[in-house]
Amino acid sequence: MPSRTGEMFEAVQGAVSETTTGDTTIIAAPGASISNFITKILVTVSVYTATSVIAIEDGAGGDRLGQWMATGHYMIDFGERGYKQTANTVLNLTVETANSTVHVTAIGYKSDKAG
Image (cartoon, rainbow, N blue to C red; front, side, top):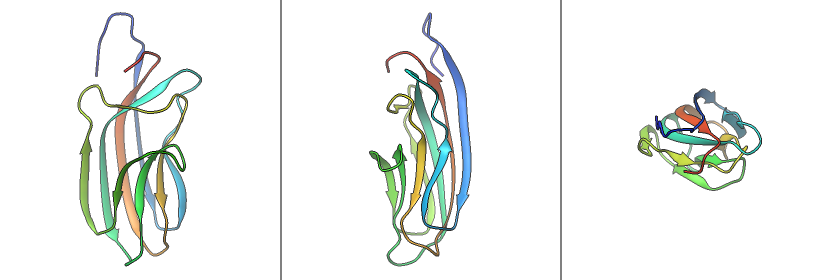
């Protein structure tokens, strides 16, 4: 985690499993004028149907940080500084087709400073 003088930060993490379609919050929105900085995401797609799309988003319906269309284990490493999410926005898992099983773990920190 960064440690610049005067920077407020607090570790954040989340883990979810999903087997139905829709959106699921992985890490909650951190509050007004605060952003989550996502450093690592681990995704396991254990059941997949031919037309499924599984994605991690910066907010429901927001920019996609990763998208998968096959079973497997996937890791995204954004480095020590992390991917700066839009302020006060959830880290979202979306599953667009039923009959898929996905597990996601994400870690990072929240900060009120610019990335």
